Length: 200
Image 1: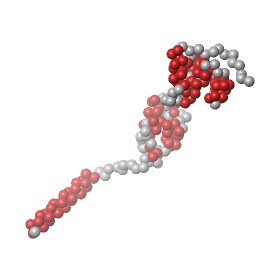
Image 2: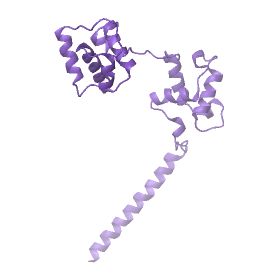
Image 3: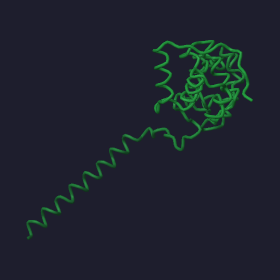
Image 4: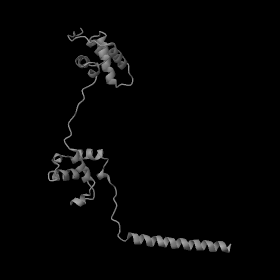
């Protein structure tokens, strides 16, 4: 036996009804929105919640939920879920910039015996030094948060596979000597080719 509902009946303007009908037939909207609009449209057309649940193969509670939301909030607002603000950011933009700045430094410059940062080492360094550097919001930073901050900046210091060594102070003179040798060799080859051409 179908359950009897005590809630008021849905009522829409013609414009809202046209919108709802179009939405229920849409192929561009998300499937979940189309299903919700079908629930509401079938209820408006007089079907009870049990019939709608069977016809659309959705849970009875889901049918009741979306009809009630449309009654409470109106058609357009009622068909969408409330946006969830989520957990607010607890790390300031300045502190994020500090994390990026540290990732761009060499650990050796800060007294570590390592050539490159790992995310674990970087997180440990930040936690140990954040108070004196006036970034207390980094006191609980972990490897995962470091990873997200660096990924947002497209930085991956732990994946660097090579680095540039210091330039030899005598590089310019050595390069000049090598280039001079090549020039002399080229000149000798050109002379040989001319001599061979004249002999022919």
